[in-house]
Length: 179
Image (cartoon, rainbow, N blue to C red):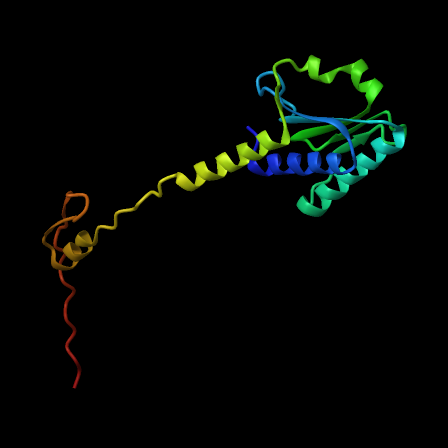
């Protein structure tokens, strides 16, 4: 399951792609049963090799600056036809338009859910709200048993209603003062 941090990183990478005028950016949330190696694919197209390289550089720079995250590996940067950046939890694919049409990764990953940036943002907000709404676990501190230990009497914890019996222990012998 993808964490909120991974989703934020995918959003930042998608924003970097759009900033460098990538065409048709697409985020695929992969089905965990179908793909055990990563959670997301970010796929974008460029019009020429130089633009694919510029997009890849912007993605790498933004993730390094904002999240201190570096790609595990980068392939194809020199040729600029298909740049693949592996961040383990997500993979960025930047294609020339004709290469993207030829390989058609979206078709190969039929079980993946296609998202846009707004949907991914909404998922983050939803997760944040759900985390905030979780009820806090209240711990009941039974003050009565502590009092029972001192007095040796039966005590009833106020909030739980449980009866606690504490046996009275022998008192230590009192030492006489030497004169």
